[in-house]
Image (tube, rainbow, N blue to C red; front, side, top):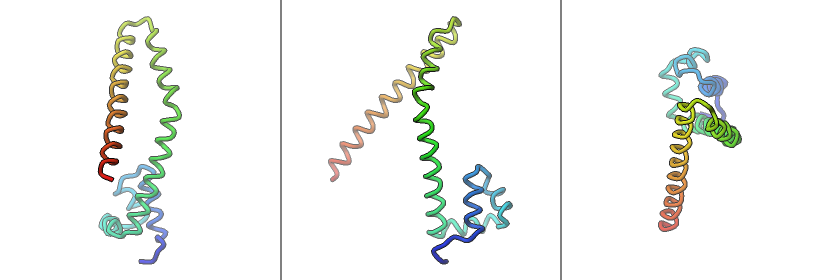
Length: 119
């Protein structure tokens, strides 16, 4: 296969990244599912699919991160609600996420130390 992807391969990647199922994506571009799996064995196709998937995830992650403060502010505001059930659920959610964030920071630090030890 040449260095470039075919029109159908590019179209299939676009369909897959739009959220379509493998079956529907294959039907839309006019290939069989076995053709898709055959293409997955080709380095160029797999690499492009991986690269575009990573770019899409990176963009989504940036959007989530950019709105994190706003989301936290919404949760914090809910702590002042009159409904005690809303307050309790909000407090639990904040505590749960704070512990998870703390665990992530700890794990990242431990992984960094392990990587430095390996080097």
